[in-house]
Image (tube, rainbow, N blue to C red; front, side, top):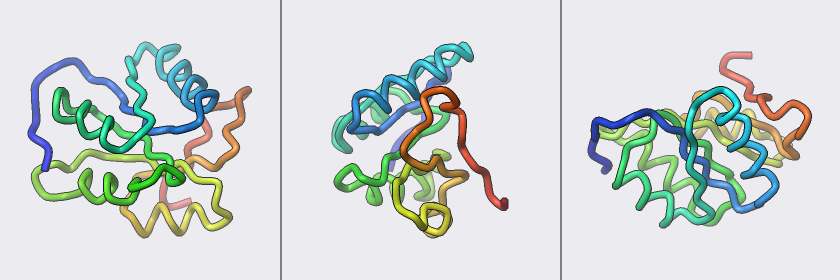
Length: 120
């Protein structure tokens, strides 16, 4: 369970692909919202423990990504998250794990803000 800390908002991006991570991070920065990138779940947990993010983007291809999603939605944490997935059934997967939206992969570098909210 993560504790809440008062600090400026930021978006945490769990993404193992450096190009995708850079694209997503740049998209948030362009909007004036700071972001931090983690390439592994343990690194993401450490960042969350240090400072609670306003939103987490979780790449489903990252090992233990579903565990992090479960921790984000646990009572006492309730951190909204967006699932990133290359799976053909990404929408169903995102809904099943409690994501607020999903981003299909590959991420369009020309239009990185392609999150799809529920319901569609």
